[in-house]
Image (cartoon, rainbow, N blue to C red; front, top):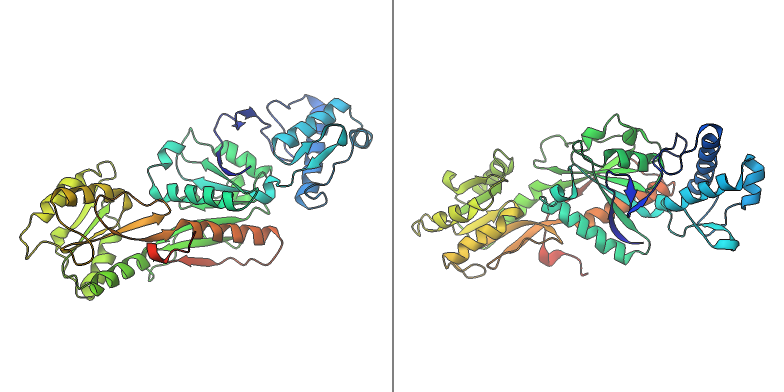
Length: 398
């Protein structure tokens, strides 16, 4: 089992119904049984699951036989079979027929990692290239590490996966949580209060002089995307190429991109005209195409000789405009285009550009390392891990 899977709000995994309930709490769904039978069924499931979680039963170990469990719990063989079926559906055990039932080699509490998106649906999550890059990184990591799975949950809005996600956390169907900025919505919920569930919060930081944003608690760590490093490296790159006039194009009105980037550029000797600092609505990124064409039709002495695209969603339209105007880009050309990006999901470009951004593979590997270390019982003090922007040429060989 590998790759990224998705839980939908209809209570199904991979198209098959599964039990919706905690390891110790009441069960609803296909395994529900009235009265004492339900209580015994839940106890059997909870006991066996706990033995797997604590390592009393290791991957590959055989579970007690049906006859042993019948005698231990004073139940029928049907009740034992239903308990086994539930553990099979949850991914903890598998049956080998007459040879018995065994703990899976890759049980979910050791090999499944949750990617928690503050979006209402998978379709909405595709609007963020950063989220897309994280998913692609998860697929790459799953291919390189046998048995690893990344499972996506969308927890915002009334039609979200929050209920299913909460139940999976309660039942320890995952090794740990990778929570993207927006995790505040889950504070004081069962997800945040679940004991022994490692959490990593991934959040951006625009200014090193400001307090670190988002949640940082004693039992979680935080990976910070240093947006300020993106600006600093962009400015150094452009000044090293002797550029003089910079335009900054970004998405979203009032974003902190402008003041930080513009101040750094001006301090480094770049001219940034106020009319060359442009914001575009996330609903109309294509507007950047027409505006860029107007920008490049200015007289040569005022036209920017460098463009920094601060949001990768704009790059396709910006570069389409540059191509339409017939302006050459790159080394020795009249214009340099430097674009923010999230590896490995590079935004498409219609002319040569230089990419500078965040390696989501590195982000995800850091998350997994923290979760695995915590799961192994090793000391994992709450900390902040800073991730800085890198050029495409600086990425490790894949």
